[in-house]
Length: 56
Image 1 (cartoon, rainbow, N blue to C red):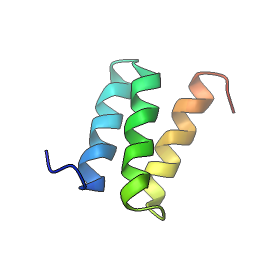
Image 2: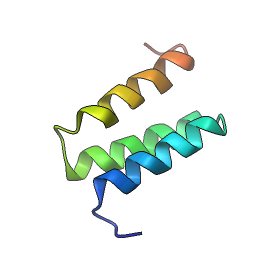
Image 3: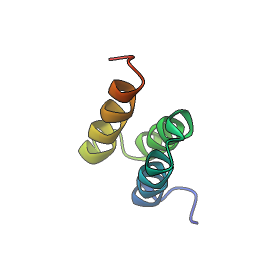
């Protein structure tokens, strides 16, 4: 995976979330946001993961 491809990091986060590995998913969304801070899909998915963990 190209390390600065924000879509790939976001997709990895979605896959990890589907596997209920929510902490790892959040880390992937954070990585996506490092490369594209205004990537709304990553913000949304991150928020969902935090909500499922009861941290939002």
